[in-house]
Amino acid sequence: MRICVLMLLVGTAVGVQAQWLNNRDSGIPRTKDGKPNLSAPAPRASNGKPDLSGVWQGEGAPISELMKILPAGVNGLGEDPPPLSFFNVLAAYKPEESPLRPELRAGYEKQAAAALTEPPPVLCGPPVMPMVNSLPAPFKIVQTPKLTLVLYESDTIFRQIFTDGRKHPDDPQPSWLGYSVGHWQGDSLVVETVGLIPFGPLDVFGHPHSEAMRVTEQFRRRDFGHMDVQVTIDDPKTYTKPFTYTIPMRLLPDTDLLENFCTEDEKDAAHMLAKK
Image (cartoon, rainbow, N blue to C red):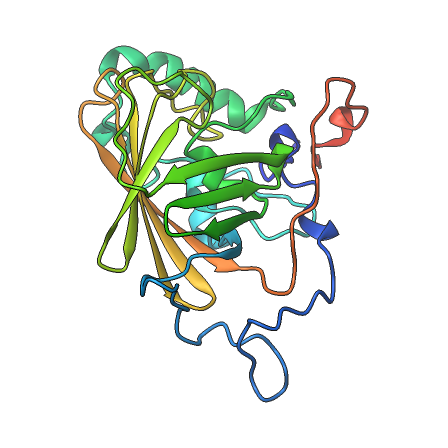
């Protein structure tokens, strides 16, 4: 039996094929045939900084790359696969080079093996930061000079990224998505997030984290239709050194988000995995 690892984990991809259709956005540049010109220059906000606003989703990893970490196969439901970081944030490391602390490796290896052979539980809990950026579901960025909002279709949750010059609180209230403060470095929005609860894995394989984790993201819009989000994890209680990975993003033009909740009386949970 091959388990579909491209599962609807915590109900994240329910709305992917149910987006609003033909919602033509007059602000999107077009080619002569009327299609969105996703290679056009990135737009600029009124303050001259790149405007990250739009509906985005992580670009699917090439099947050849997925097969390196998912040798049993990657059955799916016709959707594009998620980014590589959705499955393994340390995919770039050889097992013997992993920065995961030695005393934590046995527990992680057991979790990773189970992820490849056993159906994962479908639980109605919010996805943790920064895994939320790698989900196979869209999110929307709304950028203003002093505040950038990130609205996730998954569970209809949101993040606030404060760009008004404030510092992190001395003792932030722990939360699933943390407390985020951003500033611009050239054309990149740099976001530092602290105050994260130590629950939930960083990926499908189950890489852990602690309450000491600090996440730094760099959002860089390459052109109108593409953006890179570089993620650095610094968690000295869990990893021997910081590590970095990049999530390529693609714009979803002429669409918007739908309300999506995973509820405790979810009747579809038993059908949210594809088996063969």
